[in-house]
Length: 469
Image 1 (tube, rainbow, N blue to C red):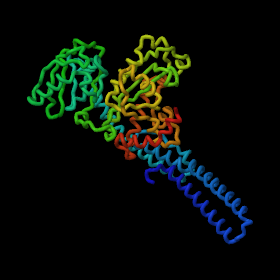
Image 2 (image 1 turned 90 degrees about the vertical axis):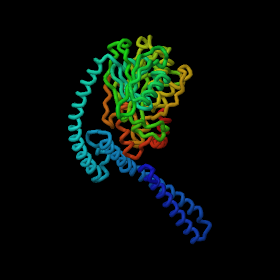
Image 3 (image 1 turned 180 degrees about the vertical axis):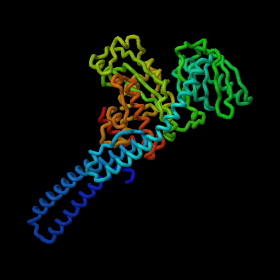
Image 4 (image 1 turned 30 degrees about the vertical axis):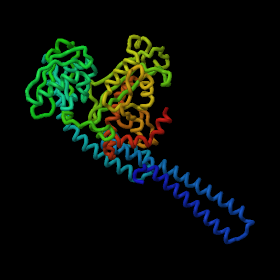
């Protein structure tokens, strides 16, 4: 019973109450009939019993509806609001009107939340001051590294990217989108890298070698250097400045926690904090996945609960068919804009690489994934990524009875979608990523620490997606 939601437990309680009342009425009428012993009054007993049973069930259902609307649902809503403020950094006052029949519970919750918010604000101010100082130092370091004529990547022992500078971003972008936690072998051929790493491990000294791009289109003079006591190595492309344009420079991107590799455990047993999420959205010619086409794909990457700035996919897609004016009015994508854009086969392959070894996240994922899976043959890929849906996450966190549109979820979690970005693929993907980052700690606070835990909970609300689609 403890795994059932509050509202479901209360519903079962009222069902038991109705069944108990019906049983008492039935037994009482049966006892009265046996005592009378007159078969002529059997019809009267049956009629009275049926009428009484109907009255008890109707009365119980009516009281349950009132109780659910005014007590059970407000309690769930109040609990979700408190968790959002405790774990997701949401500010603002609680909605006390919905909990007006809960006595002093709602004002007491508001008082606790107010004290928590005040304490959090004081802590946040201190953290902000230190963060500003670190950000300034990072900017200076980034500026210095950008001026150095080399491209540098730091890689962990499992050959996953931990850091790349602006020059390295330009090198990697020639092959595929630069991505933290991506395998280096998505960009470079395995044999030369592993041979150099073997020499580095044996000697502990710098190793020079020639690296070939994964697509065999380019080669680079590279050096592999140890990181001292830290695991992994530094990879330097010596001739990168001759192969990339100055505008390819990007800020320094890193996450040193990735130096400690988490292994290759199955997705179901991986901790939420160890997962890479690729949050995406599509804009289409219409709402029928079996006949309409994609006109835009936008995606961002989330690692360790934060959005990785700069790791973005934003592409228009030529649908191969006219875009209806009504659709253009919604997302702003016109026939002229997609005239020279890649088709779904090329754009889909690019997104597939961008989402490699990550959990794909979308708001109403079955709708967006249906377009991609329909063209999987043309793309030459298989969509076997784990999928997470923020509609279902919203149901887990806030209760199935709430509204689960992206706008409602953003309002609940204090996420603002700029008006000019709403109903653009990248704008909606960014907003979905922000609400995901706020819901992850809320899920962990409720004991859902692995991907498998979360999936098990979302499956209980699968009917929501069926109704939505």
